[in-house]
Image (cartoon, rainbow, N blue to C red; front, side):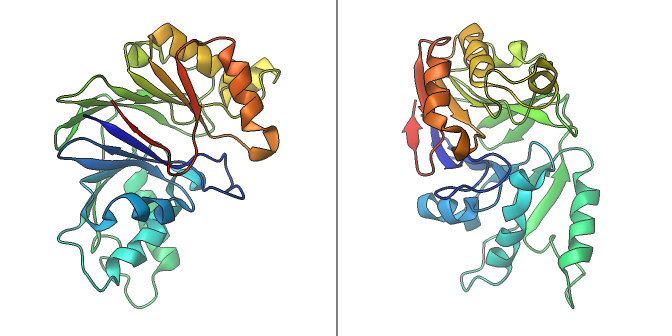
Amino acid sequence: MTRLTILGGSAAGVGTGQGCTGYLVQSDSTSIVLDLGPNTLLELRKHTDFRRLDGIVISHLHMDHVLDLFAMRFALAYNPERPPRPIPLWLPPGGLAFMDKAAELFATDDREGYFEKVYDLAEYTPDSELRIGDLTITFAPTVHHIPCWAIRVHPDEGDGDLFYTADTGTDADLDAIANGAAVIISEATFPTDSPADMSGRIHMTPRSAAELADRAGARHLVLTHMWEENDPQKFMEEARGYYTGRLTIAIPGLSFAW
């Protein structure tokens, strides 16, 4: 069995009722988080012991996908019940230098080992598989403002894979890595009538997310990374015209298994 729990689904900045990007993925023996944007740690603590995660995997280094890594650092470093070990934190290429700069910014009298005390830091190699517990993770490049990688999670057992687009425009070729996934988490940031150059190079639309899921044959599409000001319910209705499977909006606390 694989379980997905939404920690947040707001685009770029937090909404009135939810944080930004973050997803808890659990098998029978492994718990990982994909991205940890602002206000997602609060939701994570409701669903699992965050001190015992088997890994955190970051798609890219924009603040709405990583900010609560810094909040979690304090929650781990000073928690009365110390975690049993540093949490494996898998960063995209360039992530180690990014975290080193963050340590320079945040550290006061505790610079040495600032993040290493709580995280086992490493960069993944996007063209190789990453193994965490009984989960195998693969990556594909997206098209975005900065380098970013879509993520597919393959459990050893269960009823299908999970695919997460991360942030991407439609110019990315994600069909191969998405194909056959049981569940797809797809960003749908821009309105469907957005200029093609914006939706191509920066963010997907509800229509493009639905069409990707339809081509992949996914059973369930979760729309995420949306501004509440754009009316996510309307975005879901737009997507429905291009996808006939189960369709939901990323809402904190939403959890389902397959």
